[in-house]
Image 1 (cartoon, rainbow, N blue to C red):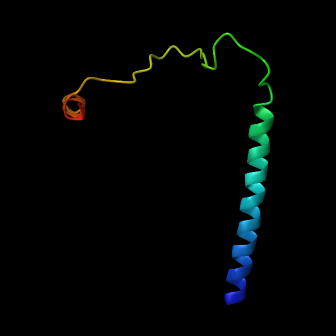
Image 2 (cartoon, rainbow, N blue to C red; image 1 turned 90 degrees about the horizontal axis):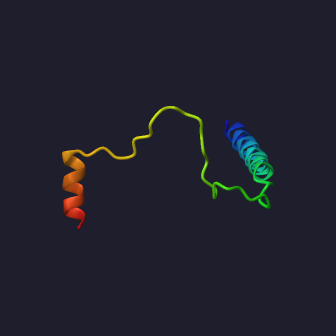
Length: 69
């Protein structure tokens, strides 16, 4: 019983490490165009027609801002 738990933990650690290596490699490959300058200064411009709402005035926010000052 104890041996099978250890084997499971060992295999899980190996799989997790492998996934981390693959993930970091994919990120590095995706960011390989660092030398290319764009006119957007790093801001991603999408084609969505949906308006993004980042703040909606509510009593809770008003109270928060009043106490934060």
